[in-house]
Amino acid sequence: MKPTRFIDLVPHIVLIVGVLIFAYPIYVTLIGSTWDSGTIGRGGLPLWPGGQGLDNYAQAWAGEAGARAKYTPVRTMMLNSLIMALAIALGKIAISILSAYAVAFFRFPLRMAFFWLIFITLMLPVEVRIIPTYKVVADLGLINTYAGLAIPLIASATATLLFRQFFLTIPDELLEAAKIDGAGPVRFFIDVVLPLSRTNIAALFVILFIYGWNQYLWPLLVTSSGDMETIVTGITKMIGTGESANDWNLIMATTVLAMLPPVAVVVFMQRWFVKGLVDSEK
Amino acid sequence: MATVEIRDVRKSYGPVDAIKGIDIAIRDGEFLVLLGPSGCGKSTLLRMVAGLEGITGGEIAIGGRVVNTLEPKDRDIAMVFQNYALYPHMTVFDNMAYGLKIRGIPKAEIRARVDKAAEILELGRFLDRRPSQLSGGQRQRVAMGRAIVREPAAFLFDEPLSNLDAKLRTQMRVEIKRLQDRLRITSLYVTHDQVEAMTLADRILVMNHGVAEQIGTPLEVYQRPASLFVAGFIGSPPMNVLDGRIDDRGEAVLVPGGQRLPLPQPRPTDAGRPVKLGIRPEHMAVAAEGFSIEIELVEALGADTVVYGRLPDGETLLVRMAGIPTVRERDRMTVAPQADALHLFDAVSGRRME
Image (cartoon, rainbow over all chains, first blue to last red; front, side):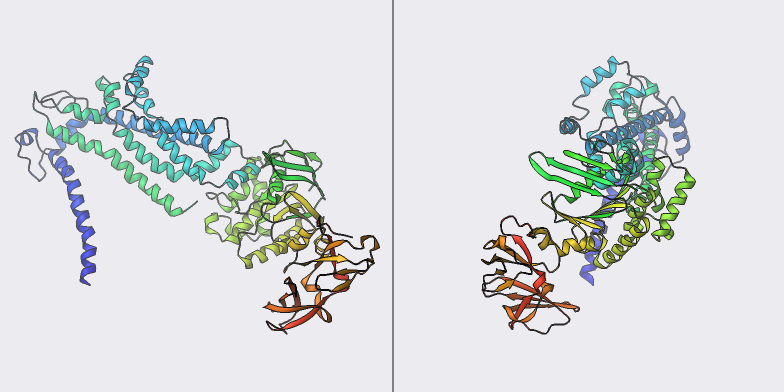
């Protein structure tokens, strides 16, 4: 029937338009990374791939210098970002799952007070507490270290809340059955809570890895040497202030490379994610 | 195998007394059913035996050892929960083996014990499955298997059949009975289902408002209910209760309709005393003289028929007759109780008068 078909068509059109709007800049970036800087500099970037791709990527990956300026090689920056993002994601998951376990399963004095304390930090994003945090990190001598990059970003109220909500759905009887089976708090956590949290951990890992990977302000403050540059700050530093022309070909190649790990994480973890959902265990 | 002794056990939540002093000694191998309506404290009592609830007062001893301060795992008990409480991410085998694994029992012995339990419960084919791949009855069996492999001093059942549909419940009831005959492990079984209580129990503890109303064998509880509460709770349809008064010579009970029901034995000391008179519907029969009722409702259950009649003073009187209905709604009929089937209760305290 005609009207139904039209109605079926509308979402597709909207989605296709949306995809085009989102995909076009990425396509331009991809194309830009295959031309030489001169072509891009003249402002006449074609919409088809050029022949400079391999050279651009090789230079961005390992090279210390572009045609006009000196950069940290992408491989160094990617490694730094990878370490930071992994430390933040895994650290956040570890800390928040443990604190959620405490808040959800144990009765101790001031339990709710602690819960609210954690909750309140939600209202204080990194940017708000950035100066005191910087002071602390500097006093501890953690400037230009991986610890300095990752630790201040690890505490996470969001993940704690998420795990707590999930833990509250675990029936009390399960805990009681484990008590009777002789499992103490640590065993119960390792043998029951962790396996049941698999899908939540996978989902959080994806979100937190991308959150860590995309950190900009904090790495900008806490790293000053090129060795510790992360990829997100590195890209912006490659773009000059206008005093000289930019190596747009290298910048675009770097950008494309910077996108790969988050994409890989999403693609790889999605399998776990879906598997967890299909297994349907409550 | 062990005895379980509960001595003047009390439980308070702040100012609220949930359990007001229960005393019972459960013999080795005995199957005790805790029966009562919701909120009567039966589950709380069971959980206190398990160690999942603290004990406010009194003592609980398992196998002669006071366990008041022991952790659940040190009490040598196994529990079957209403919602089974199986570990969803473990296979049936691992679910049953988990408690043994924690206790450091050698792998070969765990294997042997689980296989044996699986054989008893006919779970052999399912050992590699997850709980989510099992039916309700099978999950129930796994939960019992988990208890059996532990070879505990006592089994604790917390309404284990109430999540099953009626047919499966009957089937599992028979299985529990068979299992108990085979294993003879001291068991405490909480239920609000009187049929489960009557069929499974060696003895029943009827609880109401945190108090033991009566402790006795199923037939004792049915034939000689210790209080009006027990009389009303055990038996379906419930016992008829009428206001009455013992006549001046202590030879009969007078009920408001003018009926005079002779007592099997005269009780001259109670002459003139107001009483509550209990008569089970199945102990009423059609008679030439007796209660004249107008039939309001006839429930044909196949094997028997329940007649809801109204007495002249407006009270409802239930009569249970064998076979298919022989009367119709709005008919009148006259019924009388069997002489030896009268239960007398104190009009004030509700306690049975012997």
